[in-house]
Amino acid sequence: MFRQTLTKVPARGLATPVSRRAFTTTFRVMAAGDTGAPPAMGGQGDAFQKREKANEDYTIRQREKEKLIQLKAKIAEQQDHLKKLSSHIDELTKEQGGEKN
Image (cartoon, rainbow, N blue to C red; front, side, top):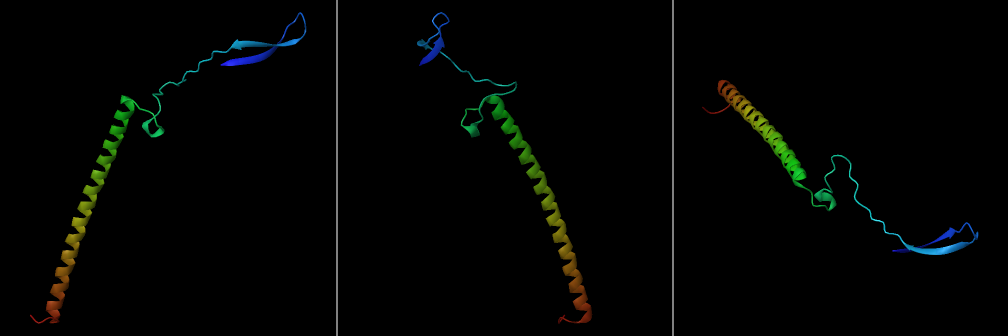
């Protein structure tokens, strides 16, 4: 890229255009621990990011599995309670003679 700049020449005191090439290169500056753009941002990602994501996904699946086990236990407990109530209601109706036995 060519740039023209005006510089003052001390001897003449005039401003003259001087052509020169400005070769500037920029490089990606990364802080400590940066590994590149994540795949969500359009980057390739790297092995560390993929491994980190896999670990996070595994942990989330484990937590969801534990929650499902707890919910199944609660459902079983509630079904047992409903069976007990149903049998109690049947006993009460038989004692009062509400149904034809």
